[in-house]
Image 1 (cartoon, rainbow, N blue to C red):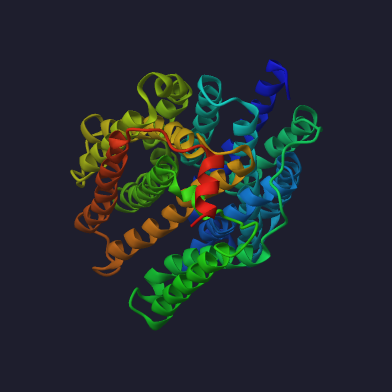
Image 2: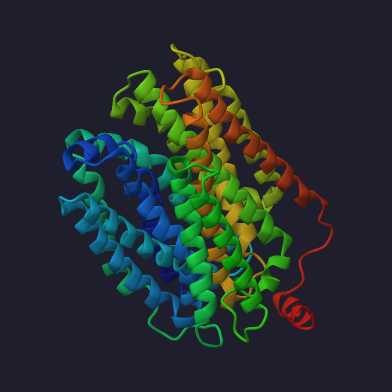
Length: 468
C-alpha cells in the first residue's frame, strides 16, 4: 500500500468497520425492553443479549491481536468481518432467546479480531508522526462516534422494530467486505516470528472470559457468594499461570516487556476508565430517563445526541491537536471534562433542566470522548514495533471492553443495594462510582507530565528484557 490514495481508501473501509464494532456495544441498549417482550426473556436472561457480545469481544481481543500479527492482518480482518456479517444476520432473524445470545457472542468474537487487525493495519501503513496521528484520529473518531451515536440510532430503529437494530449492520458489513477485498493490499506483509503460543492463548482467553462472566453475574449471585469469590480466585490463578508461562515461552502471546512502556500502560488504564465509567453512566442514565422519568426510547436516545454529535464533529481534529499539544495534556483535560460531566449529573431530580443540566452535562462528556479517545490510541501504539502493533491494539481494546463490564457490574450492585425500588439517591450513588474513576483518570494521565525522556526503542527494550 504505497500510494497515498490507496492508503486513505483502506482507512475509509477500516473506519466503517470500527464504527460497526463500536455501534454494536451500545445500539442494542434501547431495544432491550422490546426484545424481552417479543422473545419472552427473563430479566436475568436479557442481560446476556448485551453481555454475550462483551464476552466474545473482551475475552478474545488479545488472541485476535496476536493472530493478526502472526497470520497476516488482511487475512484475519477479512475472515473476521465475514463472521461479523453472518452473525449480525442470524441475530436479526432468530426467534429464540438462546440463539440470539449465541449470535451476539459470535458477533463479539468477530469484532475481537477485526478491531485489533484494523488498528494494526493503520499503524503499520502510516508512518509514525503527523500522518499516522491524523489517520488514528479519524479512525478513533469513527469508533467513538459509533459508540456515542449507537443509542440514537437504536432509538430511531426501535420505533420501527427491534430487529432492525440487529440487521442494520449487515449491508454495511457486506459493502465494507467487498471494498476491503479491493483496497487492502494482497502482497506480503511483515509478520511476527514464531508460531501460536497455544498455552498462553488458552490461559489468557479463559481468564478474560471468566473475569467478564464473573463480574456480569456477580450482582445476581452476590459479590460475597462462594461462586463469585471462587471465580475471582480462579481468574487470579489463570492470570498467574499465564504470566508464568509467558516468561518461559520463546515466542509468547504477550511479550511482557511491552508493559515497560509507560505511555502504553497509561493509555490502557485511561481507556479502561473512560469506557468503564461511561458504560456504567449510560446504564444509570437509561434507568433515570426511562424508568424514573418515563421518557420514551427515542427521547432517551436524543438526550445522548449532543455528546455524539460533538464527538463526530471534533474527533477528526485530535491528531492535529496531539501534534501541537501532546497526548498527555489532551487526556488530562479529557479526564477532567469527564469528571465534570458526571459531577453535573449528581444534581438530578424528578424535574431535570434540559438547558441547565442534561445538555451541558452531555456536552462535557462529548468533550471528554473527543479529547481522550484518539490520544489514548496514539499513546498506546507509538514506539511499538510493527510486529507487535496487533498486540498493542489488542491490549488497548481489551482494557476498554473489560473495563466496561467490570464497572457496569459494580454500578449494578450499587443500584440494587437498597432493594428493587430505584430512587434518586441510588442513582446518584451509582454516578459517584463513575465520578471517582474519572478523577483517578486525571491523576493517572498527569503522571505522564513527569516523563523526561522517550521510551527506549522496541529493539533495545526487547534486548534489555531478555537479559532479565
